Length: 517
Image (cartoon, rainbow, N blue to C red; front, side, top):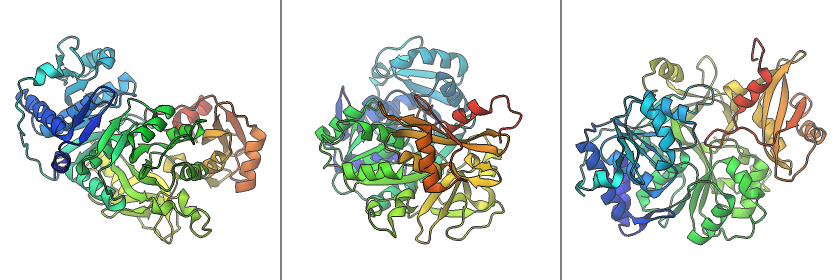
């Protein structure tokens, strides 16, 4: 099936149900479908060929989703462009992915001027909220005469449906090719692990170009209403859950920590929630327990990456119900078990699959895995050594099949000849009541080669000392894994999707060194 077929299923189930709702409009499934017909037909009339690249550059809003769906309707391949990226990175993504048509919000008119200079392959600019500058066309004028009939552009299971960007925290982002089969497998995995009863109400907060948008696309298949917020604000999120009777939402752990720290967190009604999904970074077990106490038994974790999206494994709501069970509570530190249509293994450097509880690189197989990196055969070959996709994450599977991520392969610290995995230490530091977030890195040290260092962001108004952080770690982990030092920063650097940029933190300590290990 094509992605747009899943949306059309939602239309068939609930044509008059609200589909997209933001501060300005509420459109039903039938209304959104008609809009996608017009956008798709306008693109085809403008010369769009199947699998030609189309991007939407906008804050979260209803019309941006309509343009995305319209691009898919017209047979285009969607290239997500995160509105929170710096303009130069987006210019690189647009040019590297050969984008031909750009839908954009007028909020980014100045950045679009940069794209006009640096992205010569873009031949059509469509401003989605008003008349744009230069040769841009206004969306409503552009689609005014387009027919409200389905162009019904065919596609095969291997046709390119979208080109997502790899994380980009270690260099230029790579384009990751998803086929319609990639999407179909992700959707099947999602519903297999997190079944839905009544039509959901989904709160879209994180960027639609990442997990929140993926969840929205998947939930459209069952006629979900998507309540769209333009950005994360803890107070707005709490009010929206209560007032809109939200059943589903996604947030990365960093945003969840801010939510938990809000003084009014326990003053709202969250009884409508069915699935509060978290992913994209490791989650503090202590803060996860707080979530279960505040929101109830609704937490659900997924694990994936751009190359094998979002649902390689799932820790379901039921899997979280282990607090107090000494034999199972450790599972809260896992990211769940492999989903129905995805195989997960642990591999050593020689291509040998390892036994349970042995640590190695997490590898993935199945139709969820990307087609390839766009125009990068060498990187594709490297990532698919031994016939498996290599995630770059170090982990292990326990005897019950739960996956534990120990660290990124490249984040491992070698201190005095010992392998030290930062995430294990971060879990302990996160348990401190004053800690908002932290990053553990290796810093240069004449004696140890690398010394373990903790860089910490405290909750607003909270206090802690280096001595108490180090004592906590030593008591919990012993002297080898205990950081040699800790320092406090007002704010940790984060990527546009909320991940702590360890690379940036680490580089600040390795400047001027001949080696970085």
